[in-house]
Length: 332
Length: 230
Image 1 (cartoon, each protein chain N blue to C red):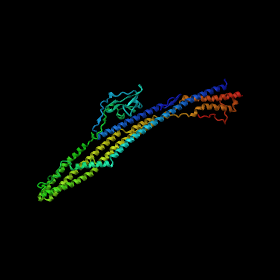
Image 2 (cartoon, rainbow over the protein chains, first blue to last red):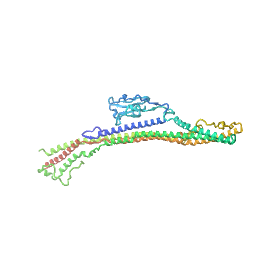
Image 3 (cartoon, helix red, strand yellow):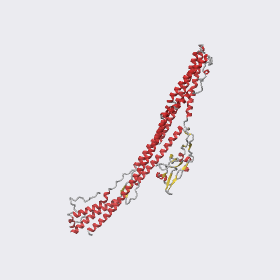
Image 4 (cartoon, rainbow over the protein chains, first blue to last red):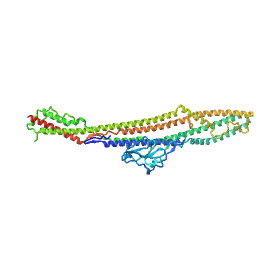
């Protein structure tokens, strides 16, 4: 907002406006970083719980260390506007010394880069950009940044990692392994008892025996199916539980990256910086001095009391005609 | 004592010069203010356009997630989930573990001392009855698998569809959260006020002096003219 080319003694709120713009830019940068962390956080949670494509690659961040922070032009880190090319390629900053844009990112695998971020009002932050120049995540130190887990690439439908189906199969099988032997034992006992009962009744080779044996076999199959059904329903409960855990992790992510607190802080910073600025004088006041002179001249010419001045009245203020008014016609 | 008319003319000249100087300074201030206002309007327009673009982008991503979710819970997708699960459950229920008996072999269910020879009358009857019982059991098991595939089995529709809604909702919530934060940041940017210029005390003093000189010039010239007429 800096109006230039003004002359003469004037006062402005230029410094305050510059500060407001700086704080607004920092708030915006902080929001960009927050959005990146939020997206990365959700992606990480999804990876942890749902896995990632089997042919994806984890980004090697071993090159990110405190001793290898990419250099940036002096002053560029504290001014958001001096960073550019966010929409594509490696991030760049304006070097005022050479009057040119210079790369400020250090290369990582997969077209990723890392480096220092523009000021967001606090301590220096560091970030990772993808091959399109989009900020992927940020951290307060290179060492913290190096701890991030970022998977990239991968087009396979097969997901690995996370809670895979084999885990649910294992749970279901464990449930079956607990209940089925009991059912088997009870079936064996029931068949023995039926055998003894039919033998005692002399009906071992009768149609009644056949019917009873068939009913027992049918009951056995239904019981086993019922156990399998219950085991699978319990496995579904486990799957829902895992889903709840994922939602809890996401809720924690949102609690960590609460936008309200950060935005309110920025809003208050800008709002408190506002000044009560005096209004400009109306343009009509510019000609008030001339108007006063003209009125006085006209008044002097038409006043019947002018003669008194010529007769020895030395005061410069003529005796007023009650009908003459103040003589001031312009606005003050 | 000099002639009041001459003094008036000198004062008038100084008043006009001072007035012009003050007017020039004030015009410069007005120009600077107009320039600052134009820059402020440009800034507000720029952040508005950026906010609108970002808002549209995020809204579109949320809309994409919603449409994707809608496809994943559509009747066709629901039927696919249910039928796949029905098949899986049917296989699971029929063979949940090592077989207690082979329902296709009558001998495996025959009691000790009971004939299971399908060529004998008793064995043939036993084989028929076991086969019929097994068939009935399988029908019931298939019905159970079908019913459970709609409900809360591991990958049943009652389990899978809510998960798909939750996953789609996570993406929509993410975009909504970012939109909310973007909007609050935009409001912060909107609070940046235009630069205000105001005439400094020097210019105002100059104008005041000029004003006084103008008054003095008027009086002196008037007095001079009167004296000349007299």
